[in-house]
Length: 114
Length: 109
Image 1 (cartoon, rainbow over the protein chains, first blue to last red):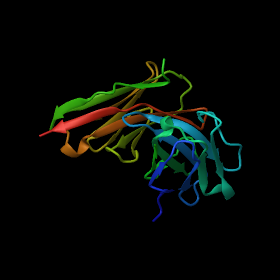
Image 2 (cartoon, chains in turn red, blue):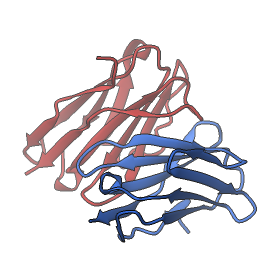
Image 3 (cartoon, rainbow over the protein chains, first blue to last red):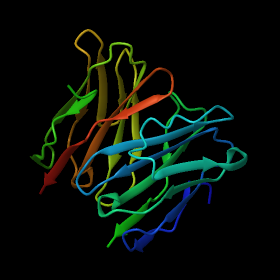
């Protein structure tokens, strides 16, 4: 399969716990994006990685959120001390070069904080 | 004003109808534009890019109006399978992608 892979597909966690979400982009894609989508809402930009450049973190909602991308490939999004308002679908997307090249989305991770 | 705005709908149309959605954007420096389709509880998928001169892909036509800062999507001969949420995406500053909140389309028999 050559698509964007995200894991886990579903995650239920207790309030206050930390979670890690993983994204494996399409091989050769230099750009990687994280978005989140609450039920019935639009996509909210979180963070963007492009090659070796410093990531654009302007969308991260608080300092409990962080992300890294190792070796220009796999990315992990970490949420510390989860809150109920963090419940959403977290979508990862990659594109060949960012900018005007199309995004390919993974199936998302549905996070539920109880 | 939001950077990218769409009418949330829903647009309820019968099979065979023609339906059009608009998407307005606020940043005149926006460079690239796309329409994505998102089915219920699924990830968005690229429907088509939007070119300055307008472009067509089968029953779908996309247009860009830079002067009025909007893009449009026209769907002819609607099918039941066209029922989905249609998201517009605007790109500026080379790498800044902004999604609209989407327009929901429901095609009924």
